Amino acid sequence: MPIGLLGMVLVTLFIQEMREESSPRFDLPGFVLTGLGLSGLILGFEVVGRAMLPLGAVLAMMAAGAGALALYVRHARRVFHPLLDLSLLRIPTFRASIVGAFMFRAGIGAIPFLLPLMLQEGFGLDPFHSGLLTFASAVGALTMKITAGPILRRLGFRPVLIANALLSGAILACYGLFRSDTPAWLILGLLLVGGFFRSLQFTSMNVLAYADIPRERMSQATSFSAMCQQLSLSFGVGFGALLLDIVMTLAGRDHLVAGDFRPAFLAVGLLAALSTAIYWRLPSDAGAELSGRLPGQGSPLPARSPRD
Image (cartoon, rainbow, N blue to C red):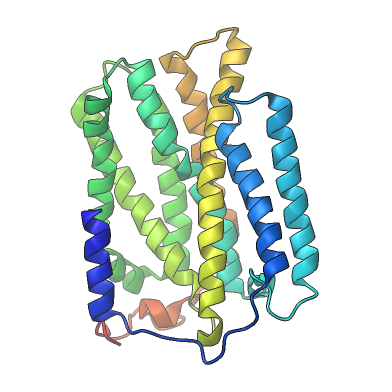
């Protein structure tokens, strides 16, 4: 809450307020369809593999959600101002950011579920000491924020997104190699480094998404991107839970052991790394205007002030 309140104050002081010249009519049918569809999918992803609901009920919930979203796609093609404008996906940088980010966030989204569970259920740590270790990821993320600009200006979006997705996926898979006798400093160090590179990827994906969005469509792009972010994170939690359930079932056990987390971390790390296939298709100068890098050259543009 303190950070949220500080953010509200800083936004009020430093971010220019922009208003639409005209507000389109509210898309009530689209609101109903997306609400039902996203609720069904997100809730289904959250509870799958956790034995909180019967499997049939979970599958029916997800099927209903998918059906509602399919109806929304049909609806969105027939109205002038849909709630979520799917035509934004025709913009290459936005499409790459949405699709690639979904895969990457889905893999990373499993960390807040898998990592504390492994430290507590697998290694026997209490929640307090588990939290002291996992907090290192947040420290690494904060450290990255002051270096993201220079990195993107020097290398550009495409190389950063490709290399960083592979590196972050590999680090995530390495979390499955932790054992109860692994030194705390090694766990802390790997979590710190992982948090740094994951945060760099998030920053790069979020900025690139709006590189070619016209100003008048910025609010629609923001809504679309926020929806995909929440859906991907929920999918990551459900995917991680389902992997653990499969491993326990194959082993014939009804409880978790430390070794169950190794294939789960490997799978989510691979999912995050697969986003490179999306970013590989980006042009070499994608987002050059935002990164401050001259297209086709190695030298960056002069650094712009925050106000610019």
